[in-house]
Amino acid sequence: MKYISYNLKNFREIPFFERICSELKFNIEVVGNILPFKVNNYIINKLINWDNTETDPVFLMTFPQKEMLNPEHFQIMSTLLKKNSDSADIRREANKIRMQLNPHPASQIQKNVPELNGKKLWGLQHKYRETVLFFPSRGQTCHAYCSFCFRWPQFVGIRKLRLVMQEVKQLIEYLKTKPDVTDILITGGDPLIMRTVFLKHIIDELLKAKLPNLINIRIGTKALSWWPYRFIDSHDAGDLLRLFRKVNRSGKRLALMTHFNHPKELSTQEVKIAVDRILDTGTIIRSQAPILKNINDSPEIWQKLWTKQVEMGIVPYYMFIARNTGAQRYFALPLVKAWDIYKKAYKNVSGLSRTVRGPIMSTDPGKIQILGPVNIGKEKVLCLQFIQARNPDWVDKLFFAEYNETAIWRNELIPAFGEKNFFYERDSR
Image 1: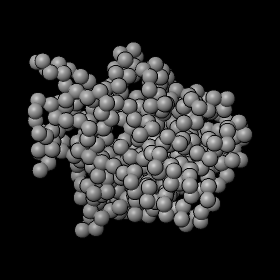
Image 2: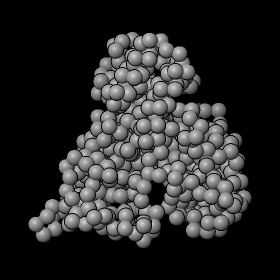
Image 3: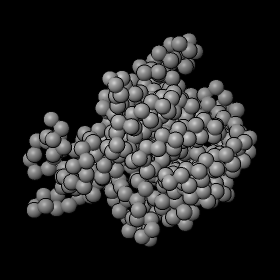
Image 4: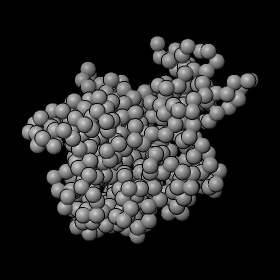
């Protein structure tokens, strides 16, 4: 299939779009001037039910909706568009609003950007001891933009918000100073938007460096969902699969960290062919996704998603909580509701699907798993634990919050039993 991309400039040319009312088209334009919007013809033709866009999960995952902005922000932008304001004025107001949407949650800029010889490495993130994230410059866009993506600041053209690195040499120099690092995650954006020749350069340099502690090379990608042709008939699909095979034969392990949010994304023949081709190279495919109101907020959907993934040879990995950034207000569920959905889905799948862990908040101190409500004495509390943390000593340590049926993020939780702080807040001082 020839690749055709749609954004704000040409979205009204999308096939089937005449079925959408003019008000919805205008709403897409309003929100799309603040949160990034991009979609392609595979999604348009293969994944969306154009007779029921109001509830279609893939449509809601890719097309901006009015409720993704708070009313004040929506009103500001809609007024500018109705007045046919100058593009510079629209961009100026859009950027003001973007800075109010917590563009870099969990202290990514303040705490995760490492240094080498006193210089900040803005294309790396190093939060957890064993894993470094690498943001190659050519991989900082996607085949389509997910409306819930916490990496949206990479795509809106605000230079100071972007995480990007031009040279893999800086990554290697840094890794040589960090012998505890076992995993590199090449991320974005989507590294598989790059031509294979550029990805090959990065991986070849990592292999040639012979870093003794490097075990796993991970690639974070949505390509299997949004453009599976990347592995089938793109001009360098064969080169890409040969690269995957090369990594696995080198003594390192390649893992494709994919994102499937709804069973619909697993339903096409194209994705099945792509998965088989990737697995044939010896690459592991793991899948992670956030639980999202309006998209996948039922145990039946998650049960079907995990079961289908295992059937196809994909390893279920994480169920995340929608992060506190961007359009969180549209997608977020109460933590206890997310846990209930997870529990009901988890108990109805086979052991092969129970590799998944969740629901998990990726927060400033680390990945916090909600283990659900428990009664301790006469008090009902919410039990939590770190499955990954800035301080490795916190991992697997249980802690408790007051039971709260409405909290959607960590900052809304209060320590249980009259404690003034959670243990990690005391330890961080």
